[in-house]
Length: 220
Image (cartoon, rainbow, N blue to C red; front, side):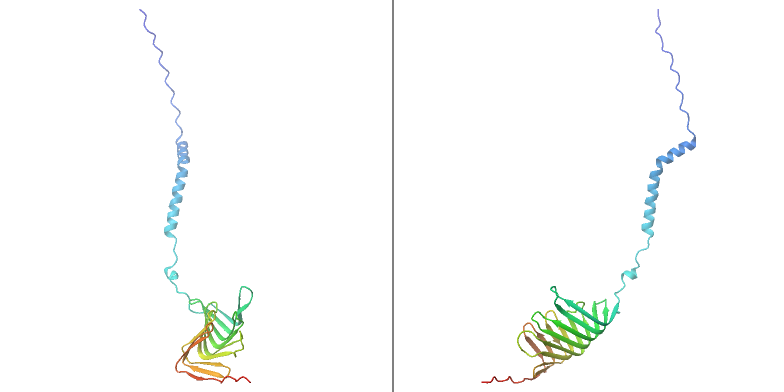
């Protein structure tokens, strides 16, 4: 009787040689080093955000300065239309700009303004307050405004008072203080005034005193 042949037992596999510990440590570090660096970067960013000082609260709430931020001496300012025509010329001994209200204050002011109809407005005063583009001017102290030229042969109109508020774009003039209007030989004194040159209408506030020069008679 024949017995089945048995396969010879397999030779035991040799175990892989064990790597030294410092090589294993270096391999582990090389695998986890990018992740470790990203974590450190995130931690550093978080620390900077939480420890960077912000803007001081007092500085954020600091009011705009009320004293002049710049001045000019013996100046002349001009504003022109798109076609190059002179619209406004502003002169004075001294100009002070106030940033809190964006206004200017002028000593010994002299203003020349030119309208589309060719008329010219000349204004003077000891002091003036104006907005940024000089389209609205308050004349204070010995204020005088004279308007001349334009269509027709009407004599110049001259306004006088201690306070005159001129709106140059809308060609209006107002005052809540006594004013004097002179034109030719006529004179009107009133306690206040609202005048619109575009509509040629004037409203005088009492008391009102007027003296009109008789119209010249035409020769026959």
